[in-house]
Length: 260
Image (tube, rainbow, N blue to C red; front, top):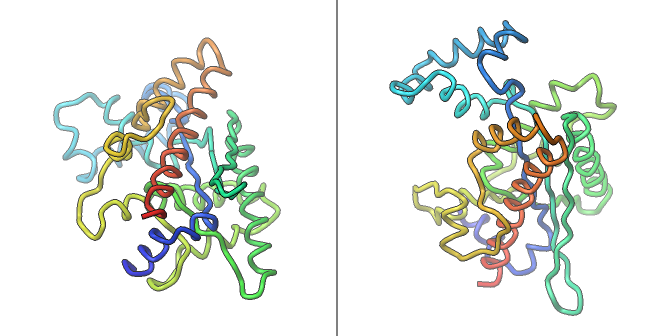
């Protein structure tokens, strides 16, 4: 895995074959009280999870609301996708340039369907090419978070989609160690070490350009719900900017590495 991964990472041509992306989600119900009032079965499921050893051992001295905010956001069952940003790199007059698109909407299905359409097209193009050619999916923590999140959300909305799961997503579940397909900066930045570094730490270390600092997902969710009470567009814009900023950071990191 390491050899193939770093063959891609340090190859200046491979960056043109990467699809950079990031999803940002918020809690469906901002508080435990609202969760219990509006979806009692889901509340009971959360209570079970919160009392499990996995979560409870980290929550001995903080409120149940805080436990909920900081942990439930990581589960697709308790959160909804508000924004997805994706980007590619192309050459123009010998200079690397980027194409970036933000998808943002309070309707989760609209966000997912728009991005899935892009993935369907990429999958179709890949199958029709000889040999089959799939872009490399690239992001931060996408193996453990974004990719499974998208697949679970597809399954949830399965009756609304008129196509199967995009092949470019499906194949990530069975890619062999010697095959290309996914570059996760979480793993890249370890350089075969063990430490999982926060993206903001990497960005500050490399002095990357950024419009705003990235916030933890729990903070993104809280700010979204606070803004939503007074200004929907501002709430959506805030989440979209967080998503775009993260995607741009990944793009900058890979731009650096592929030129070394």
